Image 1 (tube, one colour):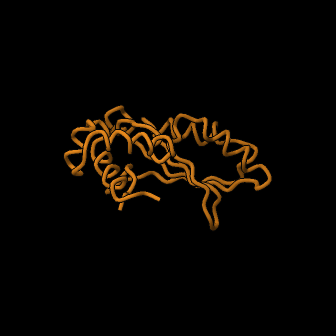
Image 2 (cartoon, helix red, strand yellow):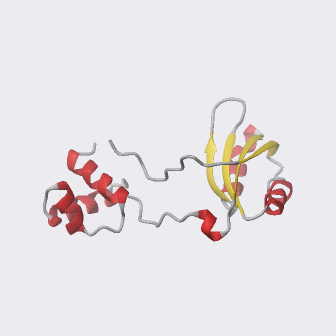
Image 3 (cartoon, one colour):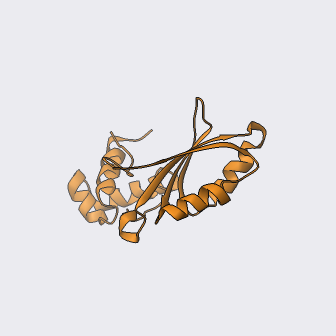
Amino acid sequence: MLSDLDKKILKSLNEDGRKSFRQVAKEVGTSSTAIYNNVKKLEKSGVINGYIPLIDPNHLGYNIIAIIRLRVNQEKERDAIEAIKKFDEVSAVYSITGEWDQILICYFKELQELDDFLINKLALPQVNRIVSHIVLNVYKDERRTLVK
């Protein structure tokens, strides 16, 4: 269970993970030693798994986002997921309920890359059906975790 101080620390670091412990302490109204100890505790417990920059894929030339739905052979689902997780184009793999089994979020520089991905990489024996959607506009893409 997270304490109120833990939540305040997480909110502060969510805004900018490069803040110093001194800056976080000033924001949440405690000492930098308390912040240091709490952050180390949050890291050790797995609440904080690391610190990464939020990079805009457009600036790297990845202008195409595809949402891909998969139906897979249930007996071989784990094999399919393990193979798909290794593809660089895939940023997220979700197992879902309903008519489909997985949703993939993928990034591509051009349509030919998407086409090659669908035809060649996803041509796995475990995959029974593929439906792809190209994202036209992104109105919200929050990658930070909500902390209340």
